[in-house]
Length: 465
Ligand code: FAD
Ligand code: NAD
Image 1 (cartoon, rainbow, N blue to C red):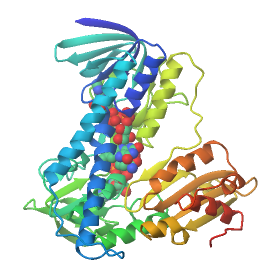
Image 2: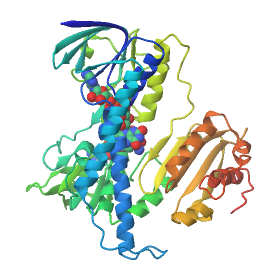
Image 3: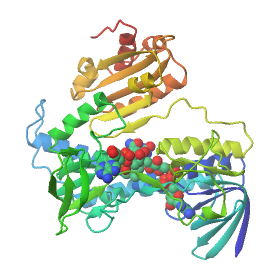
Image 4: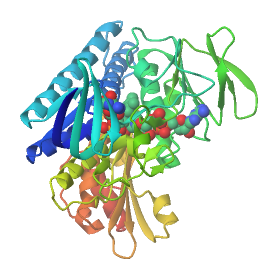
């Protein structure tokens, strides 16, 4: 059995693991990265990137459909739109492939050694990797677990046949005529909206009283309206009972207690994700857990010295940028630098139509913490740039402490607002007060002006409303 000795071994090459390995390599640590699948993990291969590529295809196709039906208010017309779905999938796969190569090149540049295969702990300092050429033992001073997450399966609706996970939905070869989505959260609504635009008849089955229960009703209202306009049926407060007897649909119990059968060529189950810890040899260790997730402290340290955990395997929020930030921090800690997690906020974006961004505290969350707050909200109907682009509903909202005007939260819903997340994060991270945001000259005409106006409004003197 080959044996490798190194300073740092990272298990899992998702956004958490590969960023950790690159930073460790840059800092001169002798680093090994173990991956059993493809570089880039869920995010690059079956998550963030391919889903946004499909959302883009759907948006472009919808524009053609609107033009062909003469629905645009500005007089565009087009011939009968057509979609070569296989080509769309090949284009999406091409982007993923380019990024896989990009990650490999970055790892090479940082002198990280990649070992391809499934890793399992033998003890707290030793990993055994099953590679194509046999087992390899890796002994390391520091170990980082970055094994990520996988879709949750419903016992009544196991994956297989026409019951698919997000991975299956992103590799379909044709657009399903009828598409039922179980779980109206991030993935269900991002992909459900995309398939509705591509021509599927979509129905969303959500167990809670409303879709996207993580966000408040003001933020989700424009999404609900848009889903209705796209012909998407939303059954909230509903329960999936299992496939129909003929396997051509889904039986559900609706909020009023009745049973309904929904026709479905494909049933997409997106009811959350669970940590990947099976077959990892965790029984050889004594790690404190939070339910199924690995418990970590402020420096991503586990309960065993020298073992760190980052990303989805440590629980919510399961977001790529959180995993990356943790990975970068842990690499610096492993190199002896004084680091701890002191970020004020982690942006969350839902790439629905329109998009939702939430950074820091919402008004409800702030009030639940007993804070006395000021809220300023500015609607896109009063923003020139939004009107020239689409005139869709939406707004920017700023939440600040009433006592010292410190900005503690920023949210927005609207087309293209995902790109405002950087400004929101920076304002909160830099400890801005309302006057800082209001006093920053925002370029005209941009959606960003709504940020400044929301701050003005919280201060009691908005200009354009
Ligand atoms: P992962 O990306 O899951 O990577 C873990 C890696 O570890 C995998 O490559 C796996 O093969 C490997 N591994 C596991 N066990 C072993 C083992 N024993 N040995 C060797 N290798 C192992 N997040 C966002 O921030 N924005 C988005 O827009 C977004 N969109 C998403 C869309 C979809 C459809 C999905 C499914 C997820 C999306 N996410 C998004 C979530 C994001 O993908 C995850 O938060 C992110 O990938 C977590 O990174 P990670 O490094 O913790 O784990
Ligand atoms: P989610 O937690 O976002 O949504 C799951 C939804 O399913 C919830 O609304 C929940 O109430 C519902 N649900 C649970 N059990 C159900 C049942 N039996 N029947 C009907 N509904 C049920 O989970 P997801 O959409 O699977 O996404 C998983 C994770 O991936 C998210 O937590 C997020 O962190 C990450 N993600 C992020 C993005 C992004 O950042 N844009 C995109 C996709 C995924």
